[in-house]
Length: 618
Ligand SMILES: *[C@@H]1O[C@H](CO)[C@@H](O)[C@H](O)[C@H]1NC(C)=O
Ligand SMILES: *[C@@H]1O[C@H](CO)[C@@H](O)[C@H](O)[C@H]1NC(C)=O
Ligand SMILES: *[C@@H]1O[C@H](CO)[C@@H](O)[C@H](O)[C@H]1NC(C)=O
Ligand SMILES: *[C@@H]1O[C@H](CO)[C@@H](O)[C@H](O)[C@H]1NC(C)=O
Ligand SMILES: *[C@@H]1O[C@H](CO)[C@@H](O)[C@H](O)[C@H]1NC(C)=O
Ligand SMILES: *[C@@H]1O[C@H](CO)[C@@H](O)[C@H](O)[C@H]1NC(C)=O
Ligand SMILES: *[C@@H]1O[C@H](CO)[C@@H](O)[C@H](O)[C@H]1NC(C)=O
Ligand SMILES: *[C@@H]1O[C@H](CO)[C@@H](O)[C@H](O)[C@H]1NC(C)=O
View 1 (tube, protein in one colour):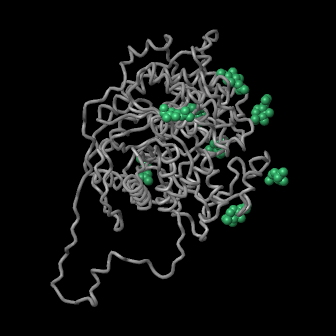
View 2 (spheres, rainbow, N blue to C red):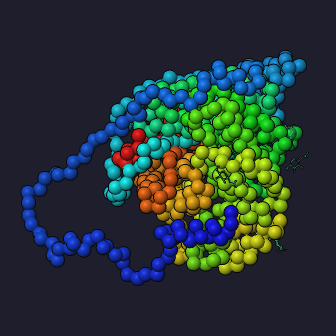
View 3 (cartoon, rainbow, N blue to C red):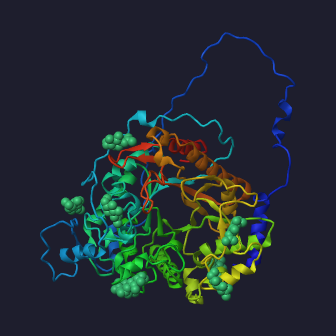
């Protein structure tokens, strides 16, 4: 991306947004001038209890005929080499008997060896369930709307027709049953080596998925986004290894149940849970700090792209008739090790896109879910701060979005920092250009950006050229306070702050830079200290309602006032879940009792749904 063009774009969007106006005195109320009576009039009347409450209940999704997005699985199966299907069962580290099929490279002994080699720390399966639970209807008392917050949106905009409103989740964060029904270990099973919470049980959604979907359907939410665990489909990860029949059956049932409720399934193929095979004979590599992201997701492994494409083809040929939207990778930057990782991701993604559109003839959509907490210049009047914010945002999105949406090279911010980046040939760019139908973004919050040395734009480039700089890889000073000394917004349990006006600015940035419709593929707010509260207080989660309603109000402003095409929004998540070693960061719009696995609706779930439905969302 050309710096001048981008600065120009930012300049024009900044006009409506991030400007600090020096001002004095209280806030003007221009709307009130006509209604100012000079003095109140006092009077007596007989007192009565006039306050009344309206009792309304949520309306469930209206069942409708399922849409078909591709030929049936029997037909699609002919597009890929014939696969062998088998089953393995459950890993029990205490088992006294050992499998005897040691001469079968993919037998029970080999499968057990995968778990023994992974050696997940403190492995216990203390879940409540061991088989799929049949759903029960949600009692109407659970669906009564809570009291409204006093302050709230008063706008008159509606969402455009076809706007996709849904909820999202990922396999490792909700499924549990991690060593059951043939699943092999993934990065998520060994990610947490210290005494923090592990991924083994989480929400037991693997067995409770029907009830979980039933609860979302009863609230009237139509779009349901989840991820498939690669290691449930292909325990040995690589092409020409057997497919796990139980994994295939599970996701078939899950997708069918979503469709039977009148809902629409959206699938992510890889949400951080890389099969361990790609770490070869050194699993401690999975703990090593990568050059680019937070975790070494092993995408750089030379066998990774072909194996990913093979996995994607197997999944798509089974489910593409019913799945409306596919995401190849979740937040790829965060699990990229180096320049090769980035290249492998965009190459594998575009191969999957071409397969889906041209060979499978899929009529659904494909994209990725990108991360980047929008970097805003600490002082919008400082050119150095604007350049730092531009560097930060383009570094995180440009390596993927430039080739995929525009057919152009990686941004300078990335090339100047990551010396071993894999150059893109003209052929690469032609092949990758246009391989996503929309831009999926997880815009949780905004963050404040300045150069490493205050006011010195050159310090950004000095860092980019300095392999040992502590500011790498973004080469900026990232903080949470604005130039006026205040936090950027109301703070959550984690890095998320409530920053709705910056969301509007961000949507302008994304749409005007990469020129594709934007979908909020995840956004959510872990209320500060929620885990310490009584359940009744967790349920009355006003700060989360404030987050969701203000974010969605600004989405409407972006659509109607700025001409930005936003085509969907997915709340993360439909229940509290495993936040990579932590259960105290409650990102959910339902609570989960970690002993009984009971779920309960939070107020924000009702408020968000009511906001959306009142504004025309199906
Ligand atoms: C294995 O046995 C130990 C000791 O009895 C027990 O604490 C642990 O939960 C068992 N592990 C599994 C996975 O059942
Ligand atoms: C394993 O469990 C024990 C007992 O709960 C705990 O003290 C220890 O920290 C755990 N270790 C790891 C690596 O999780
Ligand atoms: C890459 O993955 C393959 C499995 O496909 C593995 O055999 C190899 O050791 C891995 N390479 C490295 C460097 O870990
Ligand atoms: C395994 O990887 C770790 C982390 O990168 C490294 O420190 C260690 O030397 C490696 N071990 C072997 C045997 O290569
Ligand atoms: C990328 O594809 C679009 C749509 O086909 C086209 O307009 C654009 O020129 C292409 N970009 C490049 C750099 O060729
Ligand atoms: C590179 O960064 C390191 C760590 O911040 C610093 O000590 C060193 O002086 C820098 N080198 C150059 C050439 O700026
Ligand atoms: C980063 O910016 C903040 C806010 O201006 C400042 O307080 C802090 O000192 C800066 N950090 C460094 C290491 O310069
Ligand atoms: C969670 O469930 C357990 C088991 O049913 C129950 O004893 C406990 O009271 C529940 N906790 C809360 C906070 O409701």
